[in-house]
Every structure is written in C-alpha cells, then in structure tokens.
Image (cartoon, rainbow, N blue to C red; front, top):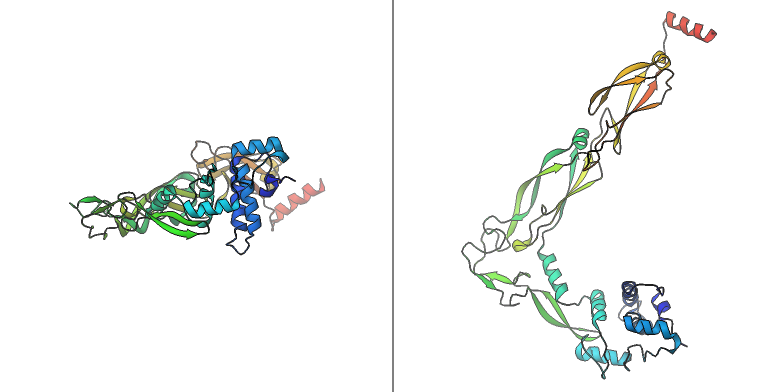
Length: 370
C-alpha cells in the first residue's frame, strides 16, 4: 500500500512548495534522533516524504500516479536511507551516490537551520549582525499640547557612537589598510565540524577582522580599533502632530554605532502623553464638558467653548438634555501625516441647584402647578 506523503508531512495537497518545506523543517526538528523527542523511524519517513513532495517533478509524478509511483526507498535512482547516510559521511550534502542524481540543497538549508551549520550567505549575515550597532529604546514624555501639535525634542543618550578620530574605521590616521591575512578579505573563515551526517563544512565570522575583510597597520588609539566608543550624544527629534500614548517612533541609524563603520542601530521612542486638566482625548477626537443651569437648558443659550484651536461659539438649542453632546467639526487632533483633523465633542451637563432663594423656589412652584 502506497504511503500518503501529504499526511506524513501534515499538509494539504494544495500546499505550496514553501509550505511543504516549512512543515518538513518543523517535524524534522521534532523527531531528529539526537533529540529527546526523537524517533529515527519517523525521521526516515519524513525524509522519504520530503524527497518526493519537496521536488516539483517528483511531486507531479506522485500526484499523477499515486500508488504506482515508485520512489525506490524515498530518494530516487535506487538511493535509500543507508545510501543517504553514507553519502553524507563521505561528502556532506553535496554529491551523488551510486550514480543517483540527488540534490541535497534543501536539506543543507533545512538542517543548517536546525543544527547551526550553513554556507557563506549565513556567515555573511552573521558578520553583519555581529558588527551592527544595537538598537536603543527610550521613553519620551509629552504634554497634551505637544502631542496634538507636534514638537521638537532634544533626547540625550549615552551610547556607543562613531569615533571622530578614525570616522568609524578603527584604523589610526595615516595607517595602511591591508587585506585580512586570516580570511583573505572574505570576512569569514571555514572550519570542519562533526555531526550526525559526518564532517560538515561550516563558516563563521573571521575573529581577526570581525567580518570586515581588512585590517590596519595601526589601531586608532581613541577607540582601540573598534571604530566607536561610549559617549553622550544629543539627538534632536521632530515629533509629528497627532502622536498618542503607546505609539513608537523609529529613528533609523540613531541607535548605537556599528563596529568599524558597520551599520548603526535604530532609536525607538516610546511615547507617553500626560493627561490634560481640560480635555479628554479619544483617538482623533477631543471631549470636554460644559455645565449649564436648567433655565439655559430649557430656553437655549450660547456658550464660548475653549478648544485646542481657540475659542468657538456654540449654540445650545432650547430643550437640551443633560449628557447631550454637540460636535465642533475639525476642532480635534490632527491625523498623523495628514491634514485631516478629528472633532471636538462638547458634553452638556445640566446642573440642578441644591439651594434656592425664596423667589426661585416660588417660580419653580408656579411651574410645577402649571
């Protein structure tokens, strides 16, 4: 009875090649024999399924012929699990066995992710990551008005900054730039490590040049060849109008400087806006309250309303009820990076007097009688 390779990998028949690869990677990591949860039989079965579904042509044949598809041990061309292991020990993931035309490229990538070995591209990325400056995250407090209208702020940071004497290169002024003798300018060095599949060729960041591929005849004395050192820097930040609490502003390249001229990290500003004693912010809208007496609510009146954009006259119609709200359009907070403004909502509170004069009490009694 033929095996259901889709079921083995836990994917649908409509799954993309990328989804097949991701499913195999996850299950291979889980069932690898070297892990406590490992299952060698299951691991072999997963590999067999992936060698079919992970290959576009073989997958087409499998989908077409189903039970009559002969995978011959799961690796094609007469190659079985033992052949696979023997080939790995002899030549790593890079060759044929018994004349079989088998591509180990995907497995090299997948097992590299699982166990940490890989090629030049990964080493190059590691080199960049090792030298790149760290990101910085700071909290920035703004007043209500600063957040609404925007503001420029000076933020003082104690961080790794580019060395002014060597401009971040790490070499002393007048020093000769040379190709790194250990990595021959490649920025990475190779080493052989033993694994389940035999000896694996691995690449790592060159320890001599830290991945830069070059050295200098004399190090900069100010930064000791690092191209950076700790110092206090002031960064002027332009806060856009309409920013709110909980939002983050990213300033690219304003974090810590990278080693030896590498890319700097970023600065992240976590915004905190203080409350206002007069206004409540609700997104792009602003809410305020106005207190009127029963006579004003009954007969109607006009009020001068204070908004963030100045005073505005608001007409209160007769018969206004307590908690009724009126909208002053476009008198609210500007939407970020646009000319659109929210509204100002005025909530009316009808205040009932607790004490009445004799005349007021008489008038209310007359109203009650009528």
